[in-house]
Length: 83
Image 1: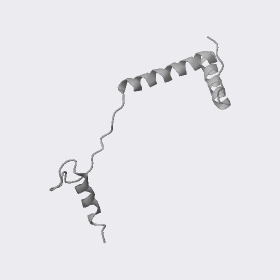
Image 2: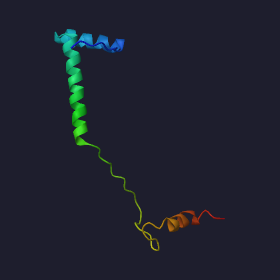
Image 3: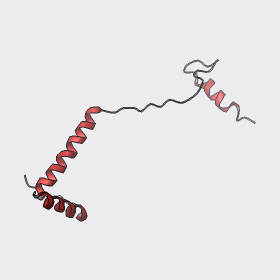
Image 4: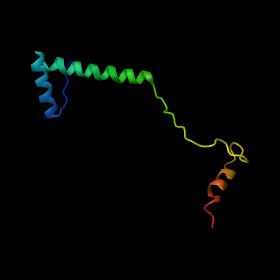
């Protein structure tokens, strides 16, 4: 298949240099690089999203606050800030 793409000039010269060193065509070098990139992207996609561990230090649940009692949580947060 034939297609046209715009490539950064410095990158193109580097790819041509690699092709010349390997005694390959520019097409072979570009296809190889693109194939490697696509395979890497597919591997990363197969792993899926992983949420990183987001723990922090503390004493856990506080006495006197029930789970989901946001009014009590807000009251404790702003308790020290009142004048």
